[in-house]
Image (cartoon, rainbow, N blue to C red; front, side):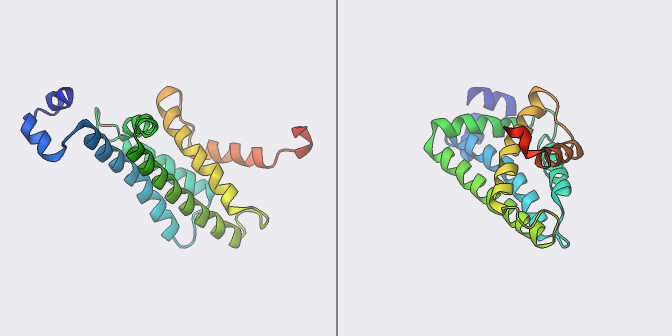
Length: 171
């Protein structure tokens, strides 16, 4: 907390007025980070016509870039730190679980609409499509910091190529 107080330039009493502990501060920062992704998904599920997978990936990449905000205030780093906290603290784990459950539901809703509008195969399982996308999202955060984040078109092309690969090659 001393480092945080020094960084903000606020008095300790001002910081403690809003956050009683470091855990409360981390919880609030994680909530802010997660809310941007939830907002992006909420907007996508409300659009008519439904944005396809490529547009959905583009919106997720754009949302990720918006989380980076001003220099020194990168919500994506906070999200990554929150994953570690979720392994340590049950309250943070519950918050992360709730977020990913809601994210999965929103992605499944999009996949159901894609299937209905024949954007994806009629045989596609919306839950499986949502599984894939919700699993890719943390990877996007990590690659953004540790390597190079692929753009939405490259991700969509890769998923399409992977999905249409000859199944006999799997053996």
